[in-house]
Amino acid sequence: MAPRVKDESYAWLDPSSAYINARAFDAMVNDLLAPFLSERIDLVAAVDAAGYVLGTALALRLGCGVLTVRKAGKLPVPTDEVEFLNYSKRAPASAVEGPGPVNPAPESCWVYQWIETGGTIGAAIELLERQGGCDCRYRNSLIEESPEAEALRKKYRCVASVRPGSEFQGQ
Image (cartoon, helix red, strand yellow):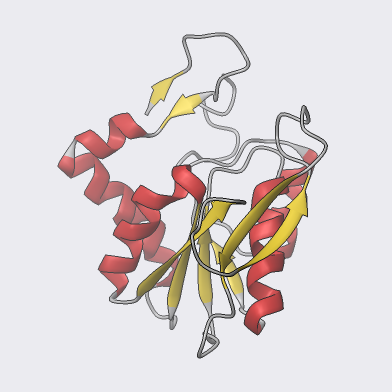
C-alpha cells in the first residue's frame, strides 16, 4: 500500500497499489480470509467505494454474493437508509443505503470498509441488522487507531491488512 504524500485531509494509505499487483492482491485476500475459513459466510456487504474492490474479491473467493452499501441518493431503486456523521464531520449528516430488505436474511455476513472514525461502518451495520439481524464481522484493509475503531474492535471480530501498532499505523 502506498503512504499518503498529500496533506492530512487525504487518507493515510492508498490500498489501490496493492490491487495492481496480482500476487499482492491474492496475498491480501488470503490473509483476510485465513482466520474465518471454517465459518459459514452467506454474504459480503461491501461499503461504498473503498469496500467494493476487496469486498467483491472476498465474496468471489468465498463463493457467496456481495451487497453494495452506497452513499444515499445513488441507487435508482427503493432503498433503506441510515443517517450518520461522516468522517470529515463537515456535513451535519450523511447516509448509507442498500436495497432492502435482504431476503432471505443471511445467517452471517461480512462488512468491509476502511475504518477511520467508524461512522460509515456503524451505519452500514445498523442498516444490515435492521434488515435481517446479520452477524456482522469485519474484514478490512485499513483500520485507523482511534477510540471509535477500538470500540468496534471490542464489539466485533476484526481483521485488517494493516496491523495495529505497525509502521503504517504510525504514519
